[in-house]
Image (cartoon, rainbow, N blue to C red; front, side, top):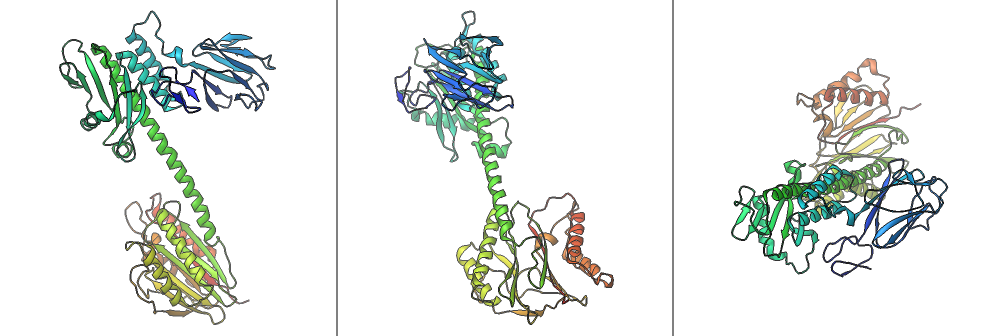
Length: 556
């Protein structure tokens, strides 16, 4: 438990700022910077700290050049002193050796090969006697602006900025309110807010954010950024909108509300408090820095969330790859090759080759209406549903009918699945299939006769009907089945021309001329892939793409 020296409130352990008045509970900061650039900041409270490599120390520095018990920080009479414990590699303070020395703000320590920067919170905001308030705040503002990229947390910046604002205009209370995900204002940081009811100012805050113009309430009038009273007026309270600076319009709408991230409020209880134009200009600059700090934090959080999402999608891609057949999953009498190109890391396309028994092999390729994570989840559901049914049924009609009912019950009306699903009897060479609205696979016989296996039923997940329309084809040794999704034929080049089904069929006919009689399956997929990539060039595609080639092995 930590007791606040300003308001005497007892705070929970390890809290950096008073939960009641917002005052700093820590006395100083120690930033530890390794030679590799790795750094960490330790917040120092009114206590002693042992520093060294041993894990029993209060501040552990994992570096071979640092002794096990290298040094100690002693808190005495409101300030910190540094003691060297006869360390092996020595200690320096501002490039000078020492045994014991009192630390000042911005002192630089070196323990072995590790650099430590000391920052005193109490010293940092004490104006020097030869500075007036405005000059002091202006100097501190420029120093903070120059070093804002090295500040450890946004709260450090905002607390410092509010302290500067309080000092500049001699305010009694200050608060920063920020829009949350629901576009409601909530308190982010406050100073001396004990007894100040912010809820009564909600109308003021919302009005300032809506107009995007600061309001300064004076004894006789209200000033805004477009005008002011003559002389230096007495002010009672101020509210400044915190405007996004770095983000584009779409981004700032997501982060705040119409480009406004929140509001900064200042209040005072004195009978007179003059506001000069010079103070007002510097106060406006402070507000811009506060807005920038808030925006940086929001953009960082969004970037961090996006990195996490990308990592999760990357993991999902690995899982999905394990669910799909491998690159060359030759199964019994079948050779199999594939080419998959998801447009959003994971694919809504689905294909599978499933050995059911020594006699039967299931072949499937499908395309979910949609892309990205939702489509990938649904394609995995379809795969699991088909595989589970194959344990007790080898009827394409029955399996597709059950899958259709599952999709209707568990998805919205706007989501559907096109599917080519067949079961090959390797003994009789008969492939019984249903084409539920999928692009017709290209069937090439050993005699180079080319045909297409056109649709037999509507896509799945739309109509509640039983699927009776099975068809069959003899799939003899040496025959080939080339299946694909619409991401192949609907892909466009820089001229907005589709790759097209006609181009694909023409290419397949070219491949299977007499001179290609002894073709290899790898060569077929490679030729189609090369032609496709040459056609689209560097144009990013908007749909998932799957090409699946299955060939019956010829008898030896």
